[in-house]
Length: 440
Ligand SMILES: CC(C)CCC[C@@H](C)[C@H]1CC[C@H]2[C@@H]3CC=C4C[C@@H](O)CC[C@]4(C)[C@H]3CC[C@]12C
Image (cartoon, rainbow, N blue to C red; front, side):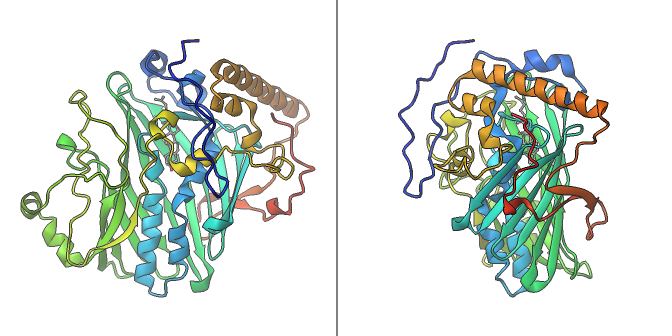
């Protein structure tokens, strides 16, 4: 293995609430490894079938990674207590945008969860508990269930990765369903596509693009958000724009901002006149002030890389209201896989926690733990062992004609969209683990 460029750090400073603020050791430098040298054999292929060297991983399971959707769960609490339906939709939309903000600058590959792997996170301080399970291996599907103090959130992710030469394109198929019981409302949406650029040369970077449609089923109110492609000179880098529509398709509110930095709402007419090309270029500077979200160092790279101008993030319209602003990443984030403060805590095993977790919890996966501790070779060895064990278990099941069934979700139909979905069976938090398989 290549030499370590980073030394073992001092033990992480623990925050007052007991959550750690950094990982046990700083990451290995990836400078000596080329993604291209691995991926060039795989053009046009589905990437889930390719084994990438552990050096390209980040020390989180994909189940932990999707828990990052909840970093700004506070927005759901706010939505669940907001009597005005239009304002409620604005908070739901802000949550949907915020839930992908942690992907900025994150170019490590999370570990593929093993079939039957689970992850739970109970954060009373944030108002929720959540659990997730890997419910299918081919194709990989992760299902999750969140119990908020005033809402519930359910969903599944079926990430499809395709390699197109210069970039990796990711389609996170699967529906997210939010219920707000106080108002008898159910909202659904799907996450937009994600693209990793500069796989051959240059700096890897993450872009989200496409249209997100958030539907409030009982009232038929809709938020339609356009995640823009970066465009010339990075003009629209990370920009998000859209409208909330009433049941008769009338525009009720404009939404705009940036999935890395924050989201605003304003009156439709003000927004529309401000976003005519002429007025926008003259009256608004495109500069991004480093007050939030910015940990990037100087950007003097090649011209294939958009500058960090962050588009016209804030338009300063008279009616502008800030719905959500991203917290800055800690300054040491680049040494730790560009994790947010929330992500740093996800693989932490708290005192006494092992006794209450099922043996399938991601925190107990030896390969991820070793990688987190900086032992890349050990992690690679364990990862191989776990994958072999999974294959062997599959063979046995085939022989005995035993179909694997998830423990906590059932395949079913989403009542609201009519599409296929995974439905939580309600039993996980009874904490009876006798049926949990030995997968690690
Ligand atoms: C080293 C290289 C090129 C491979 C790295 C690929 C990484 C960056 C890919 C692999 C799987 C991807 C994730 C797959 C699914 C989702 C769910 C979606 O709702 C948000 C994006 C997100 C979270 C993707 C982010 C990028 C991701 C983590």
